[in-house]
Length: 290
Image 1 (tube, rainbow, N blue to C red):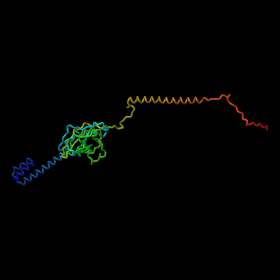
Image 2: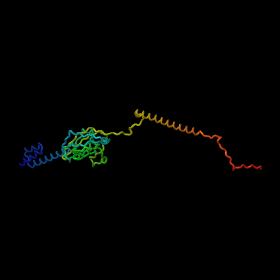
Image 3: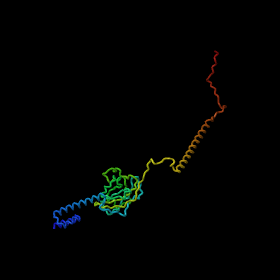
Image 4: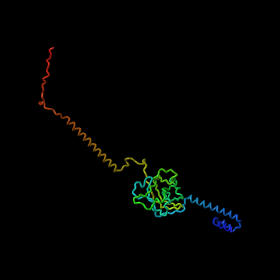
């Protein structure tokens, strides 16, 4: 009876070679020893399998939502796409199979890295600080309850990606929503994760290309680069300025000449009208002979 019990356990834990022990005449103690060795081997094999699965990033279960693809918000907002940020629509009422406390993440990836992407077991393994090495990161971790289906018509339900600068080098903030380093292009997808490891994923978004600024040293200021319209406008303004200046000088000359001509005309009284007066209190003294 004991031999049969050991054999039943060997069938569960051992391989085909161990199962042949049932037909052998080995002592019961040796059979138990073989059983312990088989169980230890299977335990190590199972542990190694789990480690391999974790290393390659295979989740327990993942499902892709075929009807949902993230997109840039269609609202008329200033700065929907800048040199380091972009604005997405919130994933409201799309993850209906998750609980309110389940976590929803945003995965940001370079377009060139999407085809080789493997979903990790732990989202924190894809930190923003490692973005330069693996070309993707996960950010904007929040509970699913923050994306309810019902929304006020006046409520702006958007997410701006790339707004945080204080946590760029902070490894304690792996979910940092840091600025994007270059124009891209990028792709994004939302991922909902349950505590048991089951994940629900949206489709990848369309390409998102950021605005690329110009280096001031590459901007040419040479006149040869000016447009024909600018040259015509500059010529017309120059001619008008010359006419205005000539008119101003002519007015000054005219005023100055008129003033000088009037200053040469002197009114002189007629000599017949000049009255002579005799002063009686002044006497002429005769000259002395000496």
